[in-house]
Length: 269
Image 1 (cartoon, rainbow, N blue to C red):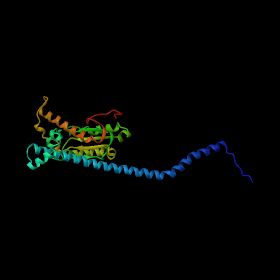
Image 2 (cartoon, rainbow, N blue to C red):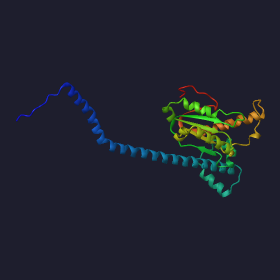
Image 3 (cartoon, rainbow, N blue to C red):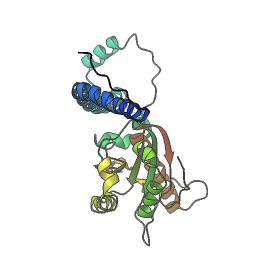
Image 4 (cartoon, rainbow, N blue to C red):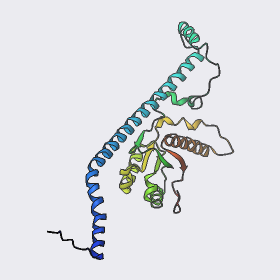
């Protein structure tokens, strides 16, 4: 008995082709997806683990460098003031006999009050999710104002002007340049409450310096024809900016410093 073949009409043929196009890739995906998804998950977990280890090692490195700089400067001071035992002086001379006499200045030469407290260069308050490696870092220094603050409006305006891709590749660092921790905590909580999504995503860091970061500004010499209060104000502002930039330097590629009372245009980034 001869087999009976049914001729396909053009419409049936078209439907069959469409079904083949849809079903074949689906079948392939069903076969491949589980293993590929598992490998991708393992890779993501490995990258996250390596990132956490890298950040931990970097933090230890920074701490070690600070301690080394502090000890080195204290040792140099002892040598220069002859407050050192002769035997130890002889040993140091032998060890450093092949080292050049040119000594580059460190931060302790210009701001020696840092030697009084090893924590003077560490923030007294940090609110962060650890975001780093971004393309753009926006620094926003702010201080306590007697009448009105525009900080929250400025942050909202900046965030509204960024699209999701820009937000994911940006870090905003708010420096509250005050040593009153109660006030600092209050402002940081306001930021967390008003911008919960951005806070959880790590878009906004909040930092504040230690009280030992600042020298005795009342002893500054008056310069540039300014009254003493303005000399104190601009000197503190320079220290505030330096603290903010030092914190930001490892966070991203580019850094822009802004005022705390601005309105940004669209596509600012």
